Image (cartoon, rainbow, N blue to C red; front, top):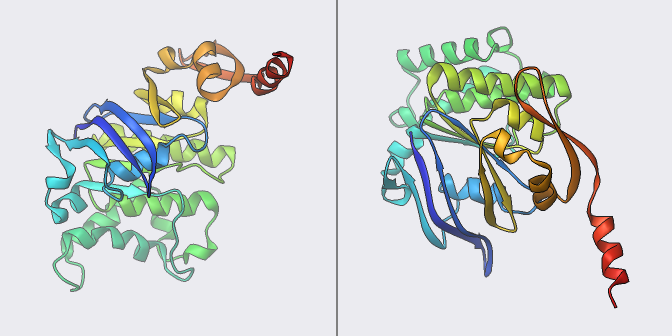
Length: 270
């Protein structure tokens, strides 16, 4: 599913958070949104997911405005996993994943044969089959996050939106989640748009990076085009070295903050 943003503006109350964002996520690719806290990344994701109505511009899916699409069809085509999510602690992994089938079911009847098959397949894809009957409260952070991602996959979406899917996870779990996203994108052709704070994870898994600051899209391109010292200084206010790994991927090594230097210059200005 091809996603296109045209001069998108969005906000809360009288405050505008996003201002004139134009961007395209190619079909079947992974687009990662980067930027400092409060720059508008999560607001952008909510607007794409139709959780927030734009103040201007448009969100297009395969050339059609997302607000003109049938709600039931959109619920089948698009899945969103917010940064914070909650479920009853005694809910089992299988029960949570089965919730992803609601957009495909008629009324509140029991799941059909196909629903059961999809849930079984998704549990296998996300390596959760052995944990299917475990309550969510008994899982590790990484296992729980896999269960939530599995729920979104049970929707069989064409577009998957993930808001900081690696938050609060240890380094190993972060790699596991990112590798899972890459694997699902590669095997199922799902278009993925996600927010990440870890620049190196983003470079490793993304086809396209979009750098946002102060509600505006500043840069969009490959990891090689975006992970450059001058861009990292402008977007994140950090000094960083960028090295290329043996796999050809650029990696960022932060070495300091630019903010102190800027404050000192301000104090020296008469």
